[in-house]
Every structure is written in C-alpha cells, then in structure tokens.
Amino acid sequence: MTDAPSTPVDLAAPDGTPLTVCAPGGGRAPRGGVVVVHDARGITPYLRSVCARLAEAGWLAAAPHLYHRQGITETPAAGGWPSAAQDMLVFTGAGLAADVDAALGHLAAAGAGDDRRAIVGFCMGGTVALATATRRPLAAAISFYGGAVTTPYWDGVPPLAELAPSLKGPWLGLYGEEDPLISLDEIKALRAAAARAAVPTELVSYPGAGHAFHSDDRAAVYRPDAAADAWARALAFLDSHLGHDSHLA
View (tube, one colour):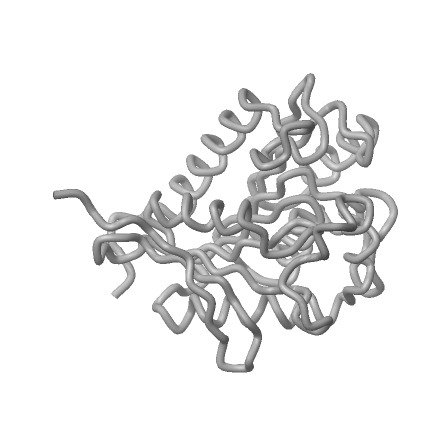
C-alpha cells in the first residue's frame, strides 16, 4: 500500500493572509517547514507543484499569496510574462515581510521553530527569500534566480548585493548564466557579497540556462538538466541544515 499523495490546500493564516499549504502525504509528520515564495506570476499550478514536491520530500510547505491585496491569486494569464513582470511592482517591502511572516507563523504553529524553518523562492520570490534571511534567523534560504541584485524592485528592500553580507543563516543561490534579467557580472557580485556573510553561502550558476530555468510549465525557458541539478541541490541543502532525525510533533 502506498502513501496518499501530498495535495496542496488553500487556507488562511491567523491574520487572514491566504496561504497554499502542502503537508507530507500518508499521515507522515513533517521534518520541518519551508516557506515557498512564488515567481511574478503568483500561485500558479507550477508553484503548487513545487509545494507538493517539497511535501513529498518530507517538508511542510506554505506559500503566501502575495497578490491578495489586489484580490487575485495569480496574474491574468492573457497578459503573459511581460505583464507579470510589471504586476509584481505593486508589492512593498512591508507587505512582503508581513505575508512571509504570516507563512512563517503558520509553520511555527505546526511546531517548526527557527532551526526547523527555511525559505525558498523563485524569480522575485528568490529576491524575497534572501531578503527574509537577512531579517529572520532561519535555518536555510534558497534563491532560484532572484533578481534586483544591484537595482531594487521595491521600496524598503535594498538590492541583494547590498543585503547579502547581512545573511543570518545559510543561503544557496541557483542562477542561469544566460539570464537576460540578471547579468553574469551581477551573479559574480552577488556571489562575492554573500561570501562576506558570517554564515555558509554558495551560488551555483548554470551555463546554457536562463531565467526561470526550473519552470517546467514554460517550454521556452525550461532547462531539464539544470532544473534537476538545482532541485537536487536545494533538497540536499534543506537536508543539511534542517534534516534532523526528529519530526515535528
């Protein structure tokens, strides 16, 4: 008999922030909790699948709906990616921090303390992941091609190259070397900035991969080899920094 699959569900945090949450299937107790921060498109089927993959690996995943103040879950599909890149500029540093903290609070209520919580983000979510790890003492943070490396996106959130030396916990960056939104010089600058932090950091870059190379719902940009390697590294990073033998109560 096999375990029931992990299925994402939508619920509200105590403060009302909408979340997509996915727990390990088959009644398994989570090993810890991971906040998942979506890309500029919002809570898409792809993002839900990421939550399910994390849950299958044993983690309790919680993804805040960052567009909830605009009354939507994801950006209008008709607008495509260029529209989403503009839509994300409605966010503010204060609003992002509040929504991420609501997701962290949900994980804490499930029994995950600072040493059992991590954050992973994609695209602008990767930016949020690193920024969060400079203000909260999390066990790990992972950024898939987070932008705003040298020029900020939002008021109240400095560029990543400025923030990175202040990381409070281990950080892993996963970037494509052919990203039209993040130059090689910026990747190098972010790697050097993160290396100045007083915590373990690593930035891995992939030749032949561009922005959103992990998005398997976008054939034009998806790079299977880079995506598989990056995902394996992300899971290993979580295992290394949160992978205690015990589970959440």
